[in-house]
Length: 520
Image (cartoon, rainbow, N blue to C red; front, side, top):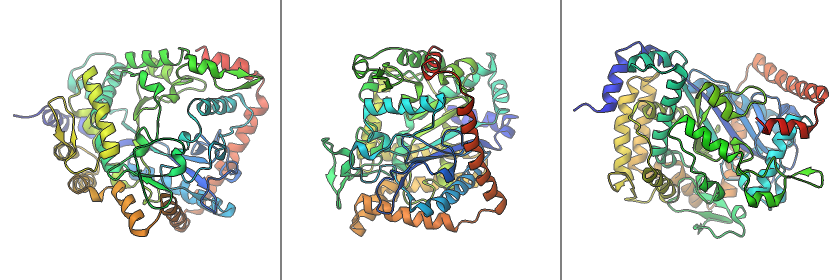
């Protein structure tokens, strides 16, 4: 009997919807710590040769001055996004080599000599810059700086705009287009949450950490080479309680079943004071310690493996943008940097993620019950710590099943989706490569990290610094046209001038600016 998925895909393939899927939009955001010649985190400010971290559209900083973030525009294919990302890396490498710095290739950081080793990002004297800085100061008071030194990769996904009206017509849906689009995105998100464990298994690349990251904490890891701790079967310690450890936010239980409830939950969190944060204080002795004492200072503080997103207007809160115009794209946030890849990700992985997200969109997606929500959390915890353990069982609503059998079932479904995907052959090749990883866990990045450490007698610090040097050599060898290099150089100067203009034209006090922002 035909399945829901096969029936849906058949309808899509034999309709005008198919022509709208000739390309899928994607953008990539990638973080990486700047480290010095001795492999320690850089204490230098964001390089002026890379522009203003406040106003540059493609090169900025995340939490700390040393945590570079590269952002691509939206492209019609992952390959184009990766080509743009490569240009950013090659341009940056040519600047970083002059100051004797490298880009750390792993999600889990280098050796850190305590909280004082990390310098919070400074975005200048404008109110917008102060808002961004103060938010990060608040994160330091709430969670510490060490946790904020973790790097990751965000993958943004959306069909083209002309897909939605055709798809709505195909399904015979009559609600406003923006509501239909949001409801379909939330169906994708629900399925992502159910099955995102497979991305942790396939692409998790943080099975080891430097001992300095958990100094003073009791963690369920074993002694590894040098000053390393390892999880023998771990896939992504970054996504575990060893990495993004946030017990306070566990009480949120944000509902991902629909936009209205999601927005309501977020608005409650950003407007509800928490006594432990009130004790920190907001403005103490004339200095801001946090934006407010609420459960979340702003929406971005909520850690989740996927987010519904919409481009905001200047000064607009993300949740208000979503409520006003609906979901525009989704941001996948559970992807580790693969330290063996110069960009942390490659085309094969990108094609697979596109197929996986398309599968999440077209598959049946019932509302997540409280019971299923608990199962989802259990499976994620098991996979990040024990994902490569032979015979590992995961929970399903139908009872326990092996990760291996669930993974192979998923690959069969993905092959069906590949039939309507752009660049079908590359997608199928990616699915076959990931099927091999399901069958043989030694092919996963997490297994390869541990193997490289063991075979070379290298600590996490030594392996990653070795790879950092190799990747910089690679980036420096990649050619950028003179025109493109000039464009990147122009962006640097334009971004600095733009920041100076913003600061020069500012008249409102930060107190008034912050009050107006929070009062939205």
